[in-house]
Length: 490
Ligand code: C2O
Ligand code: CU
Ligand code: CU
Image 1 (cartoon, helix red, strand yellow):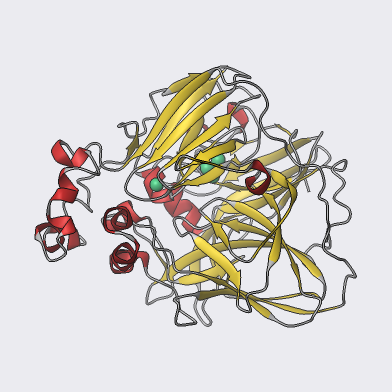
Image 2 (cartoon, protein in one colour):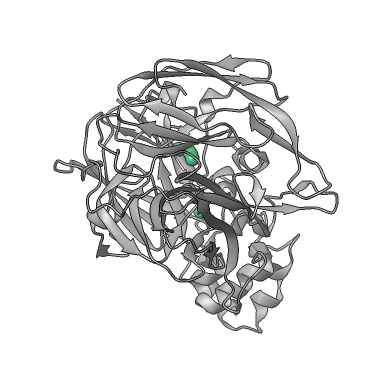
């Protein structure tokens, strides 16, 4: 609890955890064997975490979604050397919401988060008026960090960002929630609030309940929606958060399921079915399917605790409003996978598609692409970047004026990319050229870009060139491979 200016130590350290019965897995965590504690911070106060690095490699702690200046943000420039510590002062001033934190070392974010350097952060606002919502922690207010992992024969985490994983992102074949494989949560018989974080490196979840029951979305990344929205399925890309209310007053146990994730470079080129198939073949592997449609179990909820006598709210506490003001500038960010391949390949609609790819038995599919280790296109030959350049810690890619309202157009190349910006929250104006309703999406700090997206954005904290903010794809293998840029605000 960092609510009252309190300080707490977060120690990045090695650990051991037993995910599989009878086997110990080597892990890392912040003050825990795996993951870190839930940090509670309060609007209007200063939080003072002290991050201590007991590992033998560089780490950071980045407060994902928190509006703090670049010097306190925990980006790659704020690496903590082995044996050293870092103690930022976090001035908390933004609407109540569910955030998270994770390590952010350039080129190492994927493996470090995979091994456990991540945790949840709750930002509370005593004036928000959230009292009518379920609030008994672990009973009817449940944090869920969903991640996928693969274990090798000796029970250790298996991970690789090479070859096809560099393109596809790494997906595991076991589903962990809060560090346990497909757990059962014992919850109140009543209205239950789920705060869900997709803490996976690359996997996109399409969540629903096994009995098809609907639920209400009450918040997205940056806080409460204008009003609850009734849905029965929800898509959650890496780093996104969603808060749901589900009515379990009938006492029936339910399973939270997800659809398989078919996001792959092939999907963009070949259409969904073929892309999904390629996704599976290239390592996107579906975890234990539970029904014929390819859905798999994430976890179960067992409403076997006393009822909380709550009902679904008609209104929500005050959330963040739409971004006010007239834009003064437009910028474009191309999340590129193919632009540095040269020749016809540079155009994802161009030479490559005209070649063997569309011919299913043809040259390219039969050629290097299918070769996991040496594939020309799927392997090391391809560069990931933004606006044609891979990330460099020594180059500032943009300077944004403090308080300026801007429109950013983000374009995705070859597959869907979850686009994230540090230091602020943004409003999605349109997706694939169609307007997006603010009331249903709310304010975001990560948004899944299908082909194109326009966002309205503004910053009220500064980031100097020595500690710039990042913008990047939150598929961590893409980020580590260079699909990231950095900018100052001032
Ligand atoms: Cu969740 Cu730049 O990170
Ligand atoms: Cu972030
Ligand atoms: Cu990406």
